[in-house]
Length: 389
Image 1 (tube, rainbow, N blue to C red):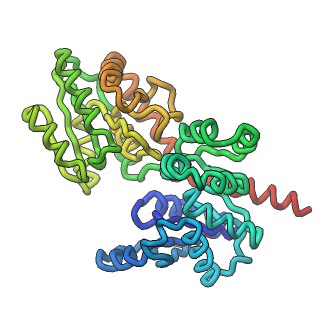
Image 2: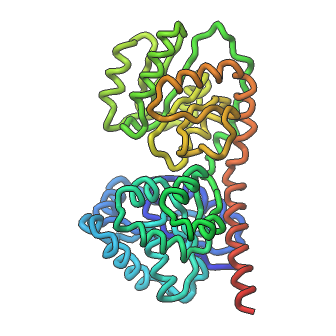
Image 3: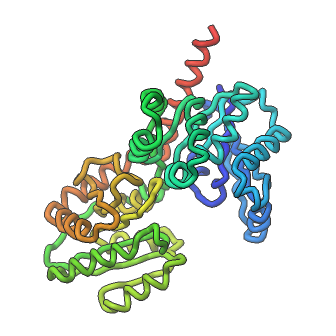
């Protein structure tokens, strides 16, 4: 059994980490501690909102206000401050493995412990690592490569991100090593959706084509291109309906889109009830979310559980886990005409694609995702035992 120490600053704002830890705790093959470094103001916000993310059976969760907002601009000072705070709260010598849930924010801290205490670590690589740090912080790229080089394994939540990062940012002499360390492990889906899988009957071609978007109304979620694709479908004579569910800084634009087609475009605010959201999925025919950048996108899995074929983005999110046309189509995010064409392709083979969706979604159960993590941990433990002999 290993003592595994997780580091994740995003733990309190995204349920996927708690769901993973809950499933890992059931296996009880290893012990787990989650460390959550946050800004001081975030801790105050959590207290005001009454947020408590520390209750996971058999898992210790430490939420620590390690830095203030000024440290956001000083990457190395921030990671060293977090490392120093951890050292005061945790006996580093009792740790067998660190699981960093982001390469730069958490992996940079793990790298420090590897250098000073020889504690091994694995690191996940997510959207912000690839599309922010590597892309917009060239002064940190070499350090990112150092973190990757020292890691035991590199976990890619998006299979597509692996190829993009390796081919675009990893020097050729390092690429073979990084590929050997790389494992693709997606996020899982909440058990509610697996318990309520919806098998669709054959779609009637005479019915309107009902498109659905669920997510934040932001420029990154690319609602404008969805609307342009919708207009193309209407110009081709399709009786198409479009529903947006969500909210965000780009909400005014979404409502302006809807005003152009007031009888065929609907906009709903965030739906917190899973049962109510389930009804929206079941009322739709196709799920459309061509995000510009995406780590994974759990809404895709929710849609798949309800038999909804997908339109998603090439090189982002779930792209790479499925063959083109299997559960839907990957499209260029700004190409509204391609999106309209692929919607047409889905309708030509709707029943088969819908069945593929409901069949494939079970591979994303948290039980299976946790097993993949356990296999990774066990392989690292065995390698360490062999090296010590």
